[in-house]
Amino acid sequence: MARNVRATQIEIEAAVEALRDGELVAFPTETVYGLGANAQNPAAVRKIFEAKGRPANHPVIVHLDSPRYLHRWVRELPEPANRLAESFWPGPLTLVLPRAPQVHEVITGGQDTIAIRVPAHPMAQQLLTAFGGGIAAPSANRYGRVSPTRAEHVREEFGESIRIILDGGECQLGLESTIVSFEGEQVRLLRPGSVTAAQIRGVVGDLLLGVGVHSPRVPGGAPTHYAPATPLTIVPAGEIDAQADAASSGGRRVAVLAQRLPLRSHQTVTWINAGRRPESYARDLYSNLRTLDKAGCQRILVQGIPDGERWDAVRDRLLRAATSIAASDDGSASMAVLP
Ligand code: TXA
Ligand code: MG
Image 1 (tube, rainbow, N blue to C red):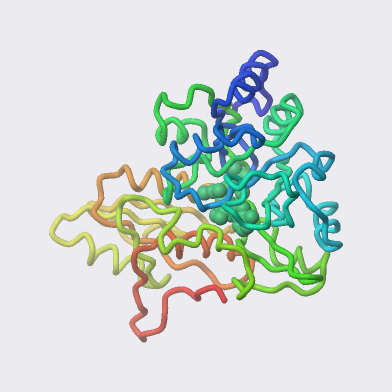
Image 2 (image 1 turned 180 degrees about the vertical axis):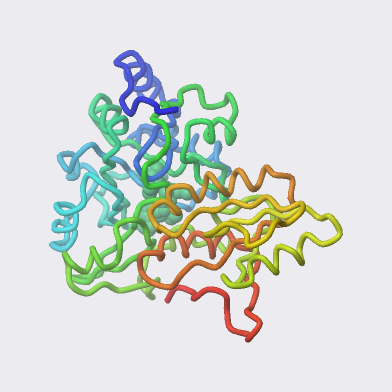
């Protein structure tokens, strides 16, 4: 069912009042749903960490409706950051910037930087504009788990404990924003997302990949993150049918996330064909993982995805969600690891 991507005035007023009262509000962005608090109220931001069970030293992103309030949060805007903001905001790009002196350490995790994002989702824009300030928001899931891409996922994660959940329907992109940081004139990709490395290079020239010695703490850097509760194995693309057969022998229930239909019918296998297009695969990934997680299976098998930069964001999340990666018959890895 299609849902409105705009909230009513009454819904926005209730959400703004809750934020001003120091309460949490879940809201949609074009990437994933966020769990928001008034970024200028440290006690409210601490509630996010309690609700998620997230370690206190993990910094959160501050969301703004436009760069107009940037000076309240950021000490200086490096030149490449300015160009990226002009090219991709509002949109799925987060910039890690030198923080202004007054920014509380609950936001920054005690680091000298702050992550800023201007989301494009109409409902996020409505909320931010009506609130008139920064909203600190990580993804609205419990720590380490799969991010929510629908309002009902937020309810699954937190039950009634989050009073206000703005429902903007399904998130259009489905994976978290691309995150970059700045080292002098150089730009580093910290987390791949739907703004691709090629698009960023198109604006700033060179791009450093991965985490450098001087990089801020790694986003989603814990060994497993974005993970379903059921153990997840990535298997070589050509072996998905054989592996599904083997894993389901003796009547064991197995869940499969593939890019095509099964070659033959497998008993006791729940099979999702997520297709071959990186955009729709990404949009549906978390929702598919939730469905497979609930299918009562002992394992989830994921068919290895193609090489290439268009798949970087999906590959990054799958590698973090995986508890193991099966080798090919010839001994090679089933999926290239990011640099
Ligand atoms: O698409 C998104 O980015 C979503 C929506 C809600 O905006 N948010 C999101 O937040 O994914 P979260 O907290 O789940 O992931 C943000 C990542 C964290 O891993 C955190 O470590 C990193 O951004 N981060 C935040 N501030 C940072 C900073 N100052 N330096 C380096 N990394 C930072
Ligand atoms: Mg998250």
